Image (cartoon, rainbow, N blue to C red; front, top):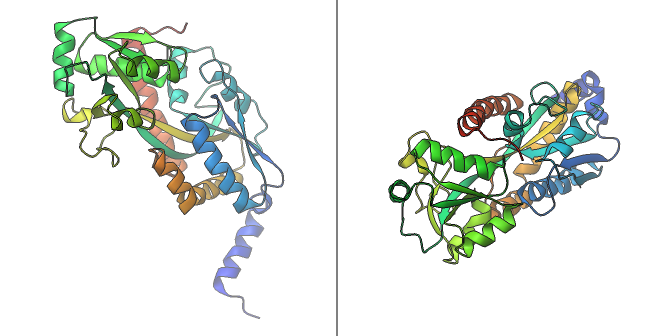
Length: 318
């Protein structure tokens, strides 16, 4: 009997990659190295629900905050490379090596990138009491008041801190970075007018912009945001400038290639599903679903960028 082409190809694949055909056989832990309710947690839970439905196995999100994401990241680096312990993290992954060179893992050696799941551009926003209405006007104001204009950061070495430092370096201005223990506290003071501006995620700042409690000056991505099309990019004033928060999936190094391929396929399928897409679009995410090779290039580019920013700003972890 002659088998249909599609069925024949599927049987060949299963015979060649038995581990991929069987994986997953039990619950998969998806570790998020941050507290619940943030952007990474939202992304992780959307993916976990859809991947569980697709594979028939549970994908459980486990929040492991602490140490500027080092605690949760280390847990995955030291996990068995069998596809049952995964990491969903942000570009803090490419910042930490320059702040914590003695961290108990090496980001290029100890992890297998699966996919860049998505990103959200950073948004530069000011309190309405600040007279600047553009990046150019902000830079002029900062030069007229060196070291007096304040910008909030969610802690030393966080993406919002690095975004602030990159802005200072690119615009050649002296802003006073005010550090907080978390995004919530920093946002409260910017919205309250105690701090002049913030360069946080679009998802976190956009609601305050739309309510009029903050004024958007520019987005940090390479193109304008669909949700705020009237807001220019920083790069329109400072060519080449780009700051965004990306969200990527990793497995421990040494995970079999066929399992990585299955993980990649399931993640990309979940990202493309209408329910996940709608949920993430509503939160301001730009959905990606890159190949592992494309993700590696993003990681290498970011490592080089943040190495330069950290060195020039002389940032030291607290």
